[in-house]
Length: 293
Image (cartoon, rainbow, N blue to C red; front, side, top):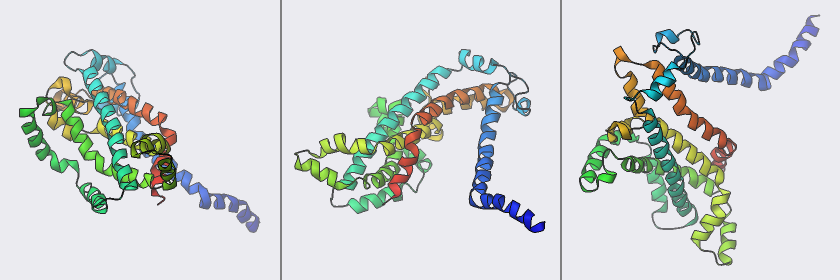
């Protein structure tokens, strides 16, 4: 009997040893990830505007916080939302374009300083952009005296700062993916008379669509979530992003409106979720294919 019981349990043990533990780990990670999201959604539906009233999840449901943040004249939520989408979209597009140009040059061309340039890109990315906040502030302040359109309190200036901070790591990420494209394709196109520009735009770019989608998604998410640099550069309320503007709702502990803050956070996450679902089929391939070489 004991031997039969062991034999009956052996398939389950075998399954758990081979693949079952992965399901357990996946479920545990999913629970840990979903708890903050569920709590924020519950807080956004809480009409009282306090965190203590949100401890009991979905104890009270109402859309007062959404109406309050959209109708309050002192809270230009739609302006913050538009600024965030504008800055994040332009930053993502320019990051992909400039990064692809640099990665193509490092991958396909041979020039003096190529290896030193790649190593320098990696070394520079070791230092977070937060360390350069003071230098960025002084630089934009000086530039703003001559060209106010790209100085402090300008969205163009913030976009330029984001482009400089993200160009290095994205270039190195694209560089690994570009190396997986056989150079024989380029050589065949050059034999037919195509130059570097035509090879890049008509042949190489369509083949590296997965990594372009991944870089665009990562750049968009990072721009939407970024707070420190945006809070230093953007001063006026009508040009601020959501990350900076929503913080004002909870900056004063006595009058913090956590429900409105949570409602704004939920609405701010919607474009990221939509973009993530739209580019989902490219994400896995774009992140892994560049590590082949």
